Image 1: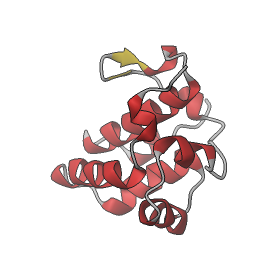
Image 2 (image 1 turned 135 degrees about the vertical axis):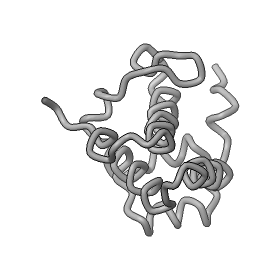
Image 3 (image 1 turned 180 degrees about the horizontal axis):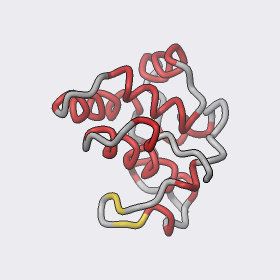
Image 4 (image 1 turned 60 degrees about the vertical axis):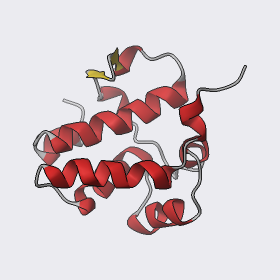
Amino acid sequence: MAGHRIFGTSFASIHPLYVTKAEKKGRTRGEVDEVIGWLTGYDPEGIAEAIADERDLETFFADAPALNPHAALITGVICGHRVEEIEDPLMQQIRWMDKLVDELARGRAMDKILRQPA
């Protein structure tokens, strides 16, 4: 079964969209990279490398140093779907990343975005 076409989209093509979305709301590229790093384990150099080599999202997540163990605490609606109910693991990871950037752009406090168990 073929994956969704978003899986083949390069991380390099969506990262600037995330940054633009955040910057329009007064946030920074550093904050975007921080939330992506929290989710994936990539450091700033790893994110820059993923952009430079134009790896697709499937490879970006497959090569992620360490998916955050608290990522399952990310809940809510993104693109009309509840992220906690998405069955495909890769699609869920992509939507988690979308959700974190969306929360950042909406002005949510960083300590709330970078979830920790209660």
